[in-house]
Length: 199
Image (cartoon, rainbow, N blue to C red; front, side, top):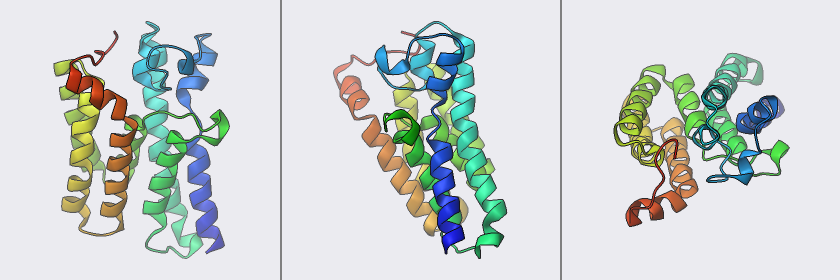
């Protein structure tokens, strides 16, 4: 049990690394908490006009979700492999991104990290959701709309792919948190004032 809890804690710490902050510092860009939407994520970093920094932020936040879940899945046998371990790590790395220990619990909205998590849980579903996000995001130029639609599909996809188990429950929780983190965007969408990508 202790080993399982340590693995979940490790997943949270991996999630707590905010690549928007790390990449911005590396490129000498402003703190993403201080401009635009004040969200430390790839879409906000793109508002600086630095496309490479935004891309690295996107890849980093996605990779940490994948790496944390994949690593825990590989190490699970050492922890007695309880059924809840991998889904718990998936939720932990996602929560780490939302409430990062290393950045005063001021995290991002979790879209890229959620994508990485789903890729590690069930890669075909992860690829489908990424395609859906890209299609909507670049079709309508509104990142939040793409995120919300993908969030709805996430638990439904896990239910279809893995059945009504712990993964499905974690999918519901992640989707609910994505909606909660996008609550301001939802209000802006309803009033027609939502920013477009790059705006």
